[in-house]
Amino acid sequence: MADLTKESRDKVLDLRKGGKIPFFCYEFVIMILSNKDEFCKKSPDWPARVVGLTGGIASGKSTVGKMLSGQNFPLIDTDRLSREVIEPKEPALEELVRAFGEKILRDDGTLDRQEMLDIILTDAKARRLVEGIIHPRVFKRMDQALRQLAASGYDLVLVEIPLLFEAGWQDLFDYIVTVVAPDSACIKRLSRRNKVSRAKALRWIATQIPQRVKAKRSDYILYNDTELDGLQIQVNRLAEVLRGLVPKAREK
Ligand code: ATP
Image 1 (tube, rainbow, N blue to C red):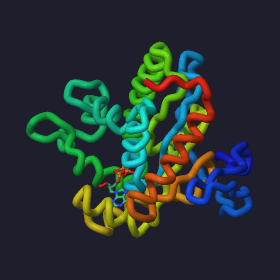
Image 2 (cartoon, rainbow, N blue to C red):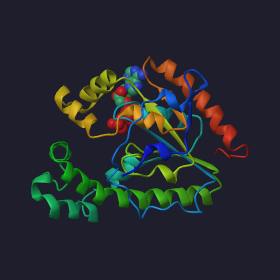
Image 3 (tube, helix red, strand yellow):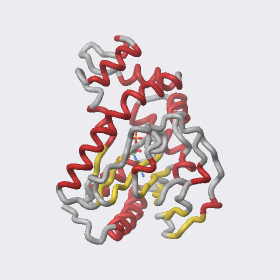
Image 4 (cartoon, rainbow, N blue to C red):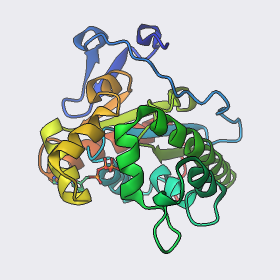
């Protein structure tokens, strides 16, 4: 069991206000992080600063990631890596089929993501099993990508990683940025984009650590509760802060 009160991150920078929020403003919550990947280790071959970009489902992480990429920050998208590791013939897909049977495959041999989603939304044990198959492989690819970027001279790299806290990977990152959005907006965006019912969107959100807990454990918070213009202003502030973290950061 992880005691969140032991966290060293006692202050977060709210990029909407530009000020510091003291720790005591946040709800005290203790959570069980049962899925910590003990094997995942930070490598000295990574760039000097590795920044994790996370947040609740459909909170706007990719939108923020794109805005930061637009400002020349190198970004690793672990969502893309997790899709790569379950492509046909990949060992992870074979392991999933051994665990759940052929019913998780479509006729063309690719993973039936809807079927898999239905399984993990209704069975927590199955969800942990799936995460245990996918997360180590995503870590391996992320590790490789970070080493390559460091070797190419990047001093600061962003990693977009939806389940950063759920996977127990928070200690891998020098800084953590969390995007938060009202649950109502996340439900609406998720239902619209993934064509799922409101009930399914709610179940999906319930599988993740609450946004307020993620925010409390972060260094920087972006609020995606308005139009994109409002988010862009916060991203611009964040970009300034990130550049300040590594004065000599080379942007290519
Ligand atoms: P996921 O958790 O699935 O990876 P995400 O956190 O990366 O999602 P996005 O993909 O950035 O979220 O956003 C979810 C959807 O909401 C997208 O269709 C995006 O275009 C839309 N969206 C994000 N922010 C806003 C906003 N401020 N106003 C309107 N639409 C938005």
